[in-house]
Image (cartoon, rainbow, N blue to C red; front, side):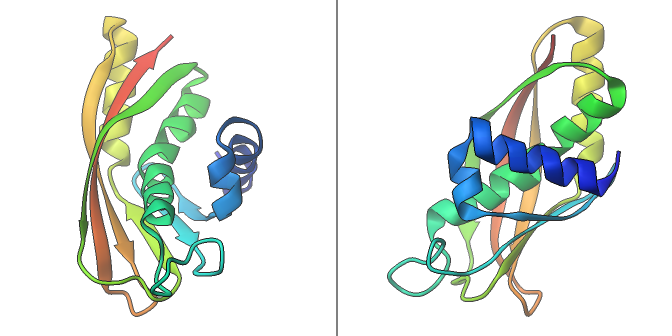
Length: 152
């Protein structure tokens, strides 16, 4: 699966299904079987009153970094997948006063959940972790995302 195709799918998702993603305008920097990296720029649309990245923009970045692997593996397998987030735990360690890179290295967990759901026909729940890093490569927030996956 090419990065270009995944970028196009993310653009369409933001345009037609989840307009808030389109409004924040995230950039997919990298995706493979293990890792996803997404960048959100600090600008007027993503700033809060303290000139740091707004909680909602950080949540959108974690959402994409935690969920893009579902699209990636469903396309590779040629299967339709129902996907949603069940829970989210966030720890904000410092203010995000620059662009933020969201990174998840839990592709294998998503792949195993899709395989398990495909075999059992049941919904599978898993946890994926996302780190948000500023331009100085410091972790500004961590996210624990509960995902629910069912192959249909």
